[in-house]
Every structure is written in structure tokens, then in C-alpha cells.
Length: 193
Image: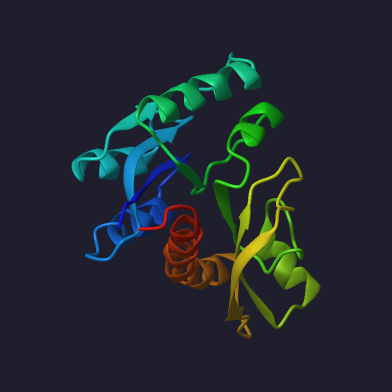
């Protein structure tokens, strides 16, 4: 089977990047990770990717117009032949041009059961709302923040006494299970054997 070439964008630790990277090393993987890029040169996930032999690209976005910065990232992705993009804790809004360039081939994971609790501070809002269940959602990226077509969800119980940190930790475990599976399903549809 011809493997899709995945580029992953991160801003911090990159735990979802690591889940995707290690899933790509399974014998029947439908994708390979060909670059990890970041808007934060100090992102710890870059060191992990480099240690695992994955090329990395990092550039501080501060002082660069959004469209210009996105063009730099886009050029790096294209230079290495990326076919699909996964956002894995990439904490920067993307320009409409960048989103359009990767339409139908760029996914994001969000730590709630979308459409509930879009945006940031999700776990605090879940607890404030008194939700009994939360989870994670993988969706195609569109210009509408956390509003693209949903490709997969996983549910996580909210436990009495949860704090934003304890809930976030459990949701993150669930994310690591969901993201590689959904990316596999997406790229397998577009890259048949």
C-alpha cells in the first residue's frame, strides 16, 4: 500500500504528535510522518521528533504576518511532499489561504465532543457546565474554528471531584487512541493501494 505523507504541526509537548508518529511505525500503517513543524522553536515535541529521525522545522511566528508565516510552513510541507496535515496542539489560528490549500486533507483534534465547547479552556467549561460526559473529536479543518466536518469522536466520563487537570489527563489518553485511527481512515480513503 502506498503510504500517505503526513506533516504534523505542534506548538508544545506534542503528545498527539508522538501518538501519530508511533502509530505510523506499525507494520500496516497507512501513513508516514515526514515532517514536524512548529511556530515555537522551544516546543519539546520537536526534540522528540528529531530523536526519532523525523525532520523538523521551527520558526517563531512573532513579528511575522499570519499569511506570511503560514506561507513559510506551507512551503516546508510541500518541499517534503506532504499529502496530509495533522494539527496536534498547534495553538495558532491558520489563514484562510492555508486552510484552503489543505482542504479535505488537514485534520485537528479537539478536547471536547464537538460542537460543544469549541475554542480554549475546554475542561474548565465542561466542569462549569456540569457535563457528565466529555471526550475528544477529530474534524477536518475549515475556516470555522473547530467547526469542520467531524470524522470521529471518543467519549470520556466526567468523574466527581474532577479538576480541569485530572479531566484533561484522561481526555488526552483518549485522544491518543482516537487520532491515529481517524487519520488512518482518512488517508486510506485518499491513498488506495
